[in-house]
Image 1 (tube, rainbow, N blue to C red):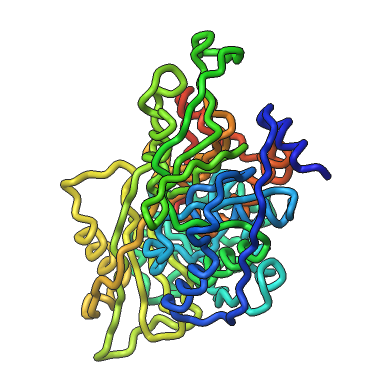
Image 2: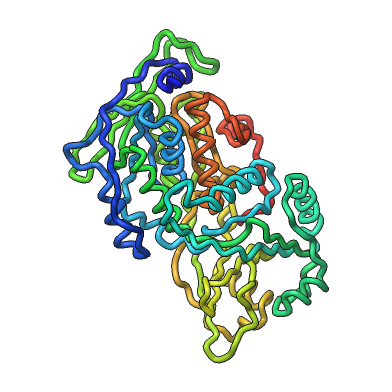
Length: 463
Protein backbone atom coordinates (compact mmCIF):
# COMPACT_ATOMS: atom_id res chain seq x y z
CA UNK A 1 0.00 0.00 0.00
CA UNK A 2 1.33 3.43 -0.97
CA UNK A 3 0.77 5.54 2.16
CA UNK A 4 2.14 8.73 0.62
CA UNK A 5 -0.56 8.49 -2.06
CA UNK A 6 -3.24 7.98 0.58
CA UNK A 7 -2.05 11.03 2.47
CA UNK A 8 -1.97 13.04 -0.74
CA UNK A 9 -5.60 12.15 -1.28
CA UNK A 10 -6.41 13.18 2.26
CA UNK A 11 -4.94 16.68 2.20
CA UNK A 12 -4.76 17.33 -1.54
CA UNK A 13 -1.08 18.13 -1.38
CA UNK A 14 2.18 16.32 -2.12
CA UNK A 15 4.30 15.13 0.78
CA UNK A 16 7.98 15.76 1.22
CA UNK A 17 9.53 12.76 2.87
CA UNK A 18 12.40 13.15 5.28
CA UNK A 19 15.46 11.09 6.03
CA UNK A 20 14.72 8.83 8.95
CA UNK A 21 16.98 8.04 11.86
CA UNK A 22 15.48 5.50 14.21
CA UNK A 23 16.20 5.50 17.93
CA UNK A 24 16.13 2.16 19.74
CA UNK A 25 16.25 1.16 23.36
CA UNK A 26 18.23 -1.74 24.71
CA UNK A 27 17.89 -1.18 28.46
CA UNK A 28 15.48 -3.40 30.42
CA UNK A 29 12.44 -1.91 32.11
CA UNK A 30 12.79 -0.68 35.66
CA UNK A 31 10.34 0.80 38.15
CA UNK A 32 11.84 4.22 38.90
CA UNK A 33 10.89 7.37 37.04
CA UNK A 34 14.50 8.60 37.02
CA UNK A 35 15.47 5.56 34.96
CA UNK A 36 12.34 5.83 32.84
CA UNK A 37 13.12 9.46 32.06
CA UNK A 38 16.73 8.66 31.16
CA UNK A 39 15.63 5.89 28.81
CA UNK A 40 12.99 8.06 27.17
CA UNK A 41 15.39 10.99 26.81
CA UNK A 42 17.90 8.74 25.06
CA UNK A 43 15.39 8.42 22.23
CA UNK A 44 14.93 12.17 21.79
CA UNK A 45 16.82 13.73 18.90
CA UNK A 46 19.97 15.67 19.60
CA UNK A 47 21.00 19.00 18.11
CA UNK A 48 22.42 17.59 14.90
CA UNK A 49 19.29 15.55 14.24
CA UNK A 50 16.65 18.26 14.35
CA UNK A 51 14.32 17.48 11.42
CA UNK A 52 12.82 20.03 9.05
CA UNK A 53 10.34 17.67 7.34
CA UNK A 54 7.85 15.07 8.54
CA UNK A 55 4.78 13.50 6.99
CA UNK A 56 2.95 13.70 10.32
CA UNK A 57 3.95 15.83 13.28
CA UNK A 58 2.32 15.21 16.65
CA UNK A 59 2.33 17.96 19.27
CA UNK A 60 2.36 16.20 22.63
CA UNK A 61 4.10 12.95 23.47
CA UNK A 62 1.91 11.79 26.34
CA UNK A 63 -0.53 8.88 26.32
CA UNK A 64 -2.63 9.98 23.35
CA UNK A 65 0.15 11.56 21.29
CA UNK A 66 2.39 8.52 21.69
CA UNK A 67 -0.52 6.20 20.91
CA UNK A 68 -1.18 8.09 17.66
CA UNK A 69 2.50 7.79 16.74
CA UNK A 70 2.50 4.10 17.67
CA UNK A 71 -0.44 3.29 15.41
CA UNK A 72 0.87 5.35 12.49
CA UNK A 73 4.24 3.60 12.58
CA UNK A 74 2.66 0.23 13.34
CA UNK A 75 0.57 0.44 10.19
CA UNK A 76 2.74 2.43 7.81
CA UNK A 77 6.25 1.54 8.94
CA UNK A 78 8.96 3.28 6.94
CA UNK A 79 6.35 4.58 4.48
CA UNK A 80 5.51 7.39 6.87
CA UNK A 81 7.81 9.73 8.80
CA UNK A 82 6.42 10.71 12.19
CA UNK A 83 7.80 13.39 14.52
CA UNK A 84 6.55 13.81 18.09
CA UNK A 85 7.22 17.14 19.78
CA UNK A 86 7.16 17.05 23.58
CA UNK A 87 8.38 19.96 25.68
CA UNK A 88 8.40 18.11 29.02
CA UNK A 89 10.52 14.99 28.68
CA UNK A 90 10.34 14.43 32.45
CA UNK A 91 6.62 13.77 31.97
CA UNK A 92 6.05 15.52 35.28
CA UNK A 93 2.31 15.74 34.61
CA UNK A 94 2.14 11.97 34.07
CA UNK A 95 4.27 10.71 36.94
CA UNK A 96 1.55 10.35 39.54
CA UNK A 97 -1.85 9.94 37.92
CA UNK A 98 -3.15 7.83 40.78
CA UNK A 99 -6.70 8.27 39.57
CA UNK A 100 -6.05 7.67 35.85
CA UNK A 101 -5.05 4.02 35.79
CA UNK A 102 -8.63 2.75 35.69
CA UNK A 103 -10.25 0.65 32.98
CA UNK A 104 -14.05 0.55 33.02
CA UNK A 105 -16.90 0.17 30.56
CA UNK A 106 -19.51 1.98 32.65
CA UNK A 107 -20.41 4.68 30.13
CA UNK A 108 -23.56 6.09 28.60
CA UNK A 109 -22.16 7.05 25.18
CA UNK A 110 -21.73 4.13 22.76
CA UNK A 111 -18.46 5.66 21.57
CA UNK A 112 -16.97 5.53 25.06
CA UNK A 113 -18.13 1.94 25.52
CA UNK A 114 -16.45 0.93 22.25
CA UNK A 115 -13.28 2.80 23.24
CA UNK A 116 -13.18 0.97 26.56
CA UNK A 117 -13.79 -2.41 24.98
CA UNK A 118 -10.95 -2.03 22.53
CA UNK A 119 -8.57 -0.49 25.06
CA UNK A 120 -9.30 -3.32 27.51
CA UNK A 121 -8.38 -5.80 24.77
CA UNK A 122 -5.18 -3.85 24.01
CA UNK A 123 -4.19 -3.85 27.68
CA UNK A 124 -4.96 -7.56 28.05
CA UNK A 125 -2.53 -8.22 25.22
CA UNK A 126 -0.03 -5.56 26.22
CA UNK A 127 3.01 -7.83 25.92
CA UNK A 128 2.13 -8.70 22.32
CA UNK A 129 1.24 -5.12 21.43
CA UNK A 130 4.27 -3.46 22.98
CA UNK A 131 6.99 -5.68 24.42
CA UNK A 132 7.28 -8.88 26.43
CA UNK A 133 8.69 -7.10 29.47
CA UNK A 134 5.95 -4.46 29.72
CA UNK A 135 4.01 -5.04 32.93
CA UNK A 136 1.06 -2.75 33.60
CA UNK A 137 0.20 -4.64 36.80
CA UNK A 138 -3.47 -4.99 35.95
CA UNK A 139 -5.65 -5.77 38.97
CA UNK A 140 -9.15 -7.01 37.98
CA UNK A 141 -10.97 -5.71 41.05
CA UNK A 142 -14.02 -4.56 39.12
CA UNK A 143 -16.02 -1.35 39.34
CA UNK A 144 -18.87 -0.48 41.68
CA UNK A 145 -21.16 2.45 40.86
CA UNK A 146 -23.42 3.89 43.54
CA UNK A 147 -26.50 5.96 42.71
CA UNK A 148 -28.83 8.01 44.86
CA UNK A 149 -32.56 8.30 44.22
CA UNK A 150 -31.89 11.14 41.79
CA UNK A 151 -29.59 9.09 39.55
CA UNK A 152 -31.04 5.57 39.99
CA UNK A 153 -33.12 5.61 36.79
CA UNK A 154 -30.14 6.87 34.79
CA UNK A 155 -28.00 4.06 36.20
CA UNK A 156 -30.59 1.47 35.14
CA UNK A 157 -30.79 3.04 31.70
CA UNK A 158 -26.99 2.94 31.32
CA UNK A 159 -26.79 -0.69 32.42
CA UNK A 160 -29.45 -1.66 29.87
CA UNK A 161 -27.43 0.07 27.15
CA UNK A 162 -24.20 -1.57 28.27
CA UNK A 163 -25.78 -5.03 28.12
CA UNK A 164 -26.59 -4.39 24.46
CA UNK A 165 -22.82 -4.12 23.96
CA UNK A 166 -22.20 -7.43 25.71
CA UNK A 167 -21.02 -5.91 28.99
CA UNK A 168 -21.63 -8.16 31.96
CA UNK A 169 -22.83 -5.91 34.77
CA UNK A 170 -25.37 -6.40 37.53
CA UNK A 171 -27.73 -4.02 39.27
CA UNK A 172 -27.43 -4.30 43.05
CA UNK A 173 -30.18 -3.51 45.53
CA UNK A 174 -29.37 -1.74 48.78
CA UNK A 175 -29.62 -5.07 50.59
CA UNK A 176 -27.13 -6.67 48.22
CA UNK A 177 -24.70 -3.77 48.62
CA UNK A 178 -24.92 -4.08 52.41
CA UNK A 179 -24.28 -7.83 52.27
CA UNK A 180 -21.32 -7.58 49.88
CA UNK A 181 -19.81 -4.37 51.27
CA UNK A 182 -21.03 -3.91 54.86
CA UNK A 183 -18.60 -1.01 55.39
CA UNK A 184 -20.54 1.19 52.91
CA UNK A 185 -23.22 3.48 54.32
CA UNK A 186 -26.28 2.97 52.09
CA UNK A 187 -28.68 5.32 53.89
CA UNK A 188 -28.85 7.67 50.88
CA UNK A 189 -28.23 5.04 48.19
CA UNK A 190 -30.99 3.70 45.95
CA UNK A 191 -29.09 1.31 43.64
CA UNK A 192 -25.64 0.10 42.73
CA UNK A 193 -24.02 -1.61 39.77
CA UNK A 194 -21.09 -4.00 39.84
CA UNK A 195 -19.05 -5.13 36.85
CA UNK A 196 -15.88 -7.21 36.98
CA UNK A 197 -15.18 -8.28 33.41
CA UNK A 198 -12.33 -6.18 31.94
CA UNK A 199 -12.66 -3.73 34.84
CA UNK A 200 -9.99 -2.75 37.32
CA UNK A 201 -6.80 -0.77 37.87
CA UNK A 202 -3.45 -0.70 36.08
CA UNK A 203 -0.11 1.07 36.26
CA UNK A 204 -0.49 4.05 33.93
CA UNK A 205 3.23 4.89 34.16
CA UNK A 206 4.16 1.51 32.71
CA UNK A 207 1.69 1.99 29.86
CA UNK A 208 3.16 5.38 28.93
CA UNK A 209 6.69 4.10 29.15
CA UNK A 210 5.87 1.09 26.99
CA UNK A 211 4.12 3.20 24.35
CA UNK A 212 7.01 5.65 24.05
CA UNK A 213 9.73 3.02 23.84
CA UNK A 214 7.86 0.87 21.32
CA UNK A 215 7.00 3.90 19.18
CA UNK A 216 10.64 4.99 19.12
CA UNK A 217 11.70 1.49 18.14
CA UNK A 218 9.21 1.60 15.28
CA UNK A 219 11.03 4.69 14.00
CA UNK A 220 9.14 7.72 15.27
CA UNK A 221 11.30 10.76 16.00
CA UNK A 222 10.83 12.33 19.44
CA UNK A 223 11.90 15.95 19.90
CA UNK A 224 12.39 17.71 23.22
CA UNK A 225 11.07 21.02 21.96
CA UNK A 226 8.14 23.41 22.12
CA UNK A 227 5.93 24.54 19.24
CA UNK A 228 5.88 28.34 19.19
CA UNK A 229 4.13 29.19 15.92
CA UNK A 230 2.50 28.02 12.69
CA UNK A 231 3.33 29.46 9.29
CA UNK A 232 0.20 30.29 7.26
CA UNK A 233 0.32 30.83 3.51
CA UNK A 234 -2.45 32.46 1.42
CA UNK A 235 -4.15 30.10 -1.04
CA UNK A 236 -5.86 32.30 -3.62
CA UNK A 237 -7.34 29.40 -5.58
CA UNK A 238 -9.10 27.64 -2.68
CA UNK A 239 -12.79 28.24 -2.08
CA UNK A 240 -14.34 27.22 1.24
CA UNK A 241 -17.84 27.77 2.58
CA UNK A 242 -17.83 30.46 5.24
CA UNK A 243 -14.48 31.85 4.09
CA UNK A 244 -14.18 34.95 1.91
CA UNK A 245 -12.79 34.11 -1.59
CA UNK A 246 -9.04 34.51 -1.74
CA UNK A 247 -8.62 34.82 2.04
CA UNK A 248 -7.95 31.18 2.92
CA UNK A 249 -4.58 30.51 4.54
CA UNK A 250 -3.11 27.03 4.69
CA UNK A 251 -0.72 25.74 7.34
CA UNK A 252 1.96 23.25 6.40
CA UNK A 253 4.88 24.44 8.52
CA UNK A 254 5.36 25.04 12.21
CA UNK A 255 8.16 26.55 14.23
CA UNK A 256 9.56 24.70 17.21
CA UNK A 257 12.09 25.88 19.77
CA UNK A 258 14.69 23.37 20.85
CA UNK A 259 16.14 23.03 24.33
CA UNK A 260 19.23 24.94 23.14
CA UNK A 261 16.95 27.80 21.96
CA UNK A 262 17.18 27.15 18.25
CA UNK A 263 14.05 27.97 16.27
CA UNK A 264 13.48 25.47 13.48
CA UNK A 265 10.82 25.31 10.77
CA UNK A 266 9.27 21.89 10.25
CA UNK A 267 7.19 21.18 7.15
CA UNK A 268 4.42 18.62 7.47
CA UNK A 269 1.47 17.12 5.66
CA UNK A 270 -0.65 16.51 8.77
CA UNK A 271 -0.35 17.91 12.28
CA UNK A 272 -2.01 16.29 15.31
CA UNK A 273 -2.59 18.39 18.43
CA UNK A 274 -2.52 16.06 21.42
CA UNK A 275 -1.02 18.50 23.90
CA UNK A 276 -3.45 17.92 26.76
CA UNK A 277 -4.27 21.07 28.67
CA UNK A 278 -1.87 23.05 26.43
CA UNK A 279 -3.93 22.24 23.35
CA UNK A 280 -5.91 25.48 23.43
CA UNK A 281 -2.75 27.62 23.41
CA UNK A 282 -1.37 25.52 20.53
CA UNK A 283 -4.62 26.01 18.61
CA UNK A 284 -4.35 29.77 19.08
CA UNK A 285 -1.04 29.68 17.21
CA UNK A 286 -3.15 28.64 14.20
CA UNK A 287 -5.58 31.55 14.85
CA UNK A 288 -8.23 29.18 16.23
CA UNK A 289 -10.22 31.29 18.63
CA UNK A 290 -8.63 34.55 17.53
CA UNK A 291 -9.61 34.73 13.86
CA UNK A 292 -12.90 35.30 12.08
CA UNK A 293 -15.57 32.96 10.73
CA UNK A 294 -14.67 29.31 11.33
CA UNK A 295 -11.63 30.45 13.29
CA UNK A 296 -13.61 32.55 15.76
CA UNK A 297 -14.52 29.62 18.03
CA UNK A 298 -11.71 28.63 20.42
CA UNK A 299 -10.70 25.12 21.35
CA UNK A 300 -12.40 24.88 24.79
CA UNK A 301 -9.67 23.00 26.67
CA UNK A 302 -8.69 23.97 30.18
CA UNK A 303 -6.27 22.55 32.71
CA UNK A 304 -7.93 21.17 35.83
CA UNK A 305 -6.22 19.79 38.87
CA UNK A 306 -7.38 18.01 41.98
CA UNK A 307 -5.78 16.37 44.96
CA UNK A 308 -5.46 12.64 45.50
CA UNK A 309 -5.59 11.49 49.12
CA UNK A 310 -4.22 8.52 51.01
CA UNK A 311 -6.41 6.92 53.68
CA UNK A 312 -4.52 5.21 56.48
CA UNK A 313 -5.76 3.63 59.67
CA UNK A 314 -2.79 2.71 61.80
CA UNK A 315 -4.67 2.07 65.05
CA UNK A 316 -7.20 -0.51 63.88
CA UNK A 317 -7.95 -2.79 60.99
CA UNK A 318 -10.28 -1.50 58.30
CA UNK A 319 -12.82 -3.80 56.65
CA UNK A 320 -11.68 -3.08 53.12
CA UNK A 321 -10.43 -6.35 51.62
CA UNK A 322 -8.21 -7.22 48.67
CA UNK A 323 -11.33 -7.62 46.53
CA UNK A 324 -12.41 -4.03 47.11
CA UNK A 325 -13.51 -2.67 43.71
CA UNK A 326 -12.91 0.77 42.31
CA UNK A 327 -15.90 2.67 43.72
CA UNK A 328 -17.54 5.71 42.18
CA UNK A 329 -19.95 7.43 44.54
CA UNK A 330 -22.97 9.43 43.50
CA UNK A 331 -21.24 12.53 44.97
CA UNK A 332 -18.26 12.28 42.58
CA UNK A 333 -16.03 10.71 45.23
CA UNK A 334 -13.90 7.82 43.95
CA UNK A 335 -12.01 5.29 46.03
CA UNK A 336 -9.70 2.34 45.36
CA UNK A 337 -7.09 0.21 47.10
CA UNK A 338 -3.47 1.30 46.85
CA UNK A 339 -2.13 -1.90 45.32
CA UNK A 340 -1.63 -4.64 47.90
CA UNK A 341 -0.92 -2.19 50.67
CA UNK A 342 -3.27 -1.72 53.60
CA UNK A 343 -4.11 1.70 52.28
CA UNK A 344 -6.77 3.34 50.18
CA UNK A 345 -6.58 6.32 47.88
CA UNK A 346 -9.44 8.58 46.91
CA UNK A 347 -10.31 11.85 45.23
CA UNK A 348 -13.16 14.13 44.24
CA UNK A 349 -13.92 14.69 40.56
CA UNK A 350 -14.06 18.45 39.88
CA UNK A 351 -17.17 19.95 38.34
CA UNK A 352 -17.08 20.80 34.62
CA UNK A 353 -18.01 24.39 35.51
CA UNK A 354 -15.59 25.52 38.17
CA UNK A 355 -16.88 27.48 41.15
CA UNK A 356 -14.22 29.33 43.11
CA UNK A 357 -16.54 29.43 46.12
CA UNK A 358 -16.58 25.61 46.36
CA UNK A 359 -13.98 23.82 48.48
CA UNK A 360 -13.44 20.43 46.88
CA UNK A 361 -11.47 19.24 49.90
CA UNK A 362 -14.46 19.98 52.14
CA UNK A 363 -16.74 18.09 49.75
CA UNK A 364 -14.33 15.15 49.73
CA UNK A 365 -14.12 14.88 53.51
CA UNK A 366 -17.87 15.19 53.87
CA UNK A 367 -18.55 12.55 51.17
CA UNK A 368 -15.84 10.22 52.50
CA UNK A 369 -17.08 10.26 56.09
CA UNK A 370 -20.68 9.84 54.98
CA UNK A 371 -20.09 6.91 52.62
CA UNK A 372 -17.37 5.12 54.59
CA UNK A 373 -17.92 5.68 58.33
CA UNK A 374 -14.79 3.67 59.18
CA UNK A 375 -12.73 6.47 57.67
CA UNK A 376 -13.88 9.05 60.20
CA UNK A 377 -10.98 8.15 62.50
CA UNK A 378 -8.54 7.47 59.69
CA UNK A 379 -5.62 9.66 58.71
CA UNK A 380 -6.47 11.29 55.37
CA UNK A 381 -3.67 13.23 53.72
CA UNK A 382 -3.00 14.56 50.20
CA UNK A 383 -0.31 12.58 48.39
CA UNK A 384 -0.32 14.13 44.92
CA UNK A 385 -2.11 16.38 42.47
CA UNK A 386 -3.56 14.92 39.28
CA UNK A 387 -4.10 17.00 36.14
CA UNK A 388 -6.69 16.67 33.39
CA UNK A 389 -7.40 18.41 30.09
CA UNK A 390 -11.03 19.35 30.57
CA UNK A 391 -13.29 20.20 27.63
CA UNK A 392 -15.31 22.98 29.24
CA UNK A 393 -17.94 22.79 26.49
CA UNK A 394 -19.36 19.34 27.26
CA UNK A 395 -16.62 17.37 29.08
CA UNK A 396 -16.23 14.94 26.15
CA UNK A 397 -13.09 14.55 24.05
CA UNK A 398 -12.51 16.42 20.78
CA UNK A 399 -11.16 14.28 17.97
CA UNK A 400 -10.70 14.92 14.27
CA UNK A 401 -9.76 17.72 11.85
CA UNK A 402 -10.57 21.38 12.31
CA UNK A 403 -13.16 22.56 9.76
CA UNK A 404 -10.87 25.36 8.52
CA UNK A 405 -7.41 23.82 8.92
CA UNK A 406 -8.34 20.43 7.51
CA UNK A 407 -4.82 19.03 7.98
CA UNK A 408 -4.80 20.00 11.66
CA UNK A 409 -6.24 17.19 13.80
CA UNK A 410 -7.26 17.35 17.45
CA UNK A 411 -7.04 14.54 19.98
CA UNK A 412 -7.60 16.27 23.28
CA UNK A 413 -10.07 17.06 26.06
CA UNK A 414 -10.62 13.45 27.16
CA UNK A 415 -9.96 14.23 30.84
CA UNK A 416 -9.35 11.17 33.02
CA UNK A 417 -10.70 8.83 30.32
CA UNK A 418 -7.82 9.79 28.03
CA UNK A 419 -5.36 7.41 29.70
CA UNK A 420 -7.52 4.29 29.58
CA UNK A 421 -8.85 5.11 26.11
CA UNK A 422 -5.51 6.16 24.61
CA UNK A 423 -4.90 2.89 22.70
CA UNK A 424 -8.24 3.21 20.89
CA UNK A 425 -7.98 6.98 20.40
CA UNK A 426 -4.55 6.64 18.81
CA UNK A 427 -5.85 3.96 16.46
CA UNK A 428 -8.80 6.18 15.48
CA UNK A 429 -6.57 9.16 14.60
CA UNK A 430 -4.29 6.90 12.56
CA UNK A 431 -7.33 5.70 10.62
CA UNK A 432 -8.36 9.27 9.82
CA UNK A 433 -4.88 10.04 8.51
CA UNK A 434 -4.20 6.83 6.59
CA UNK A 435 -7.71 5.72 5.56
CA UNK A 436 -9.31 9.19 5.49
CA UNK A 437 -12.16 7.84 7.65
CA UNK A 438 -12.89 5.90 10.82
CA UNK A 439 -12.79 2.21 9.97
CA UNK A 440 -13.29 0.51 13.36
CA UNK A 441 -15.10 2.84 15.79
CA UNK A 442 -17.11 5.72 14.36
CA UNK A 443 -16.10 8.72 16.46
CA UNK A 444 -17.55 11.35 14.13
CA UNK A 445 -19.65 12.82 16.94
CA UNK A 446 -16.44 13.72 18.80
CA UNK A 447 -15.53 16.21 16.08
CA UNK A 448 -14.94 19.94 16.53
CA UNK A 449 -18.02 20.67 14.40
CA UNK A 450 -20.38 19.96 17.31
CA UNK A 451 -19.06 23.07 19.03
CA UNK A 452 -19.76 25.23 15.99
CA UNK A 453 -23.37 24.01 15.72
CA UNK A 454 -23.83 23.84 19.50
CA UNK A 455 -24.67 20.15 19.87
CA UNK A 456 -23.00 19.02 23.10
CA UNK A 457 -22.21 15.35 23.57
CA UNK A 458 -22.82 14.50 27.21
CA UNK A 459 -21.38 11.48 28.99
CA UNK A 460 -23.37 10.86 32.17
CA UNK A 461 -20.84 8.42 33.66
CA UNK A 462 -17.58 10.32 34.15
CA UNK A 463 -14.65 8.83 36.08
